[in-house]
Length: 81
Image: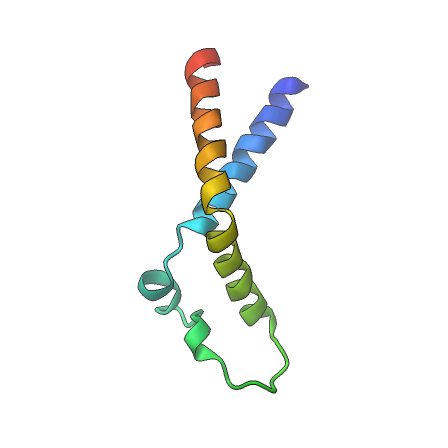
């Protein structure tokens, strides 16, 4: 049971890492998911714009916590393998 919980935590961490490393100019702008593609101020936010905002917030807010959590997981895996 504990192993399953640890695996779920590691999978979640890997997913958050993958979202955090998406670069807006190199990757997101190519597929049209940049913040610069907004239509104006009075438009209703779409699902696409909400996802772009979530990616941006993940990159901004979770940068330092991800470094710490990744370090803890790496040490855990090195020690307990």
